Picture: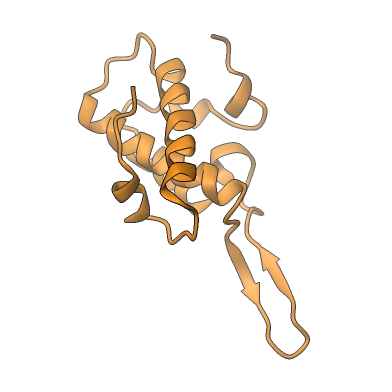
Length: 118
């Protein structure tokens, strides 16, 4: 069951997605939190906050990629994501890592973002 809400996610990421689409990202973030933090001593408040930032990370990784540079005359755009892989690839994922007092997310990179053992 999700710990965060559409409004809380919208408070950290500007998006044109419909609420029903954001709910799908929240559901995915919730499932990831459930797996990653199984057996980890963490407060529900912290898990809720991490879920919010991970939902934003998932949105920024797919539908609403973060622009690093934009242009006008020659119309160009460079997307962010050069920071690292996994959660380190967006500012939202980086924020989640910073907020995680258990340091569980520091080990979540690359393929582990999606394929950590269940």
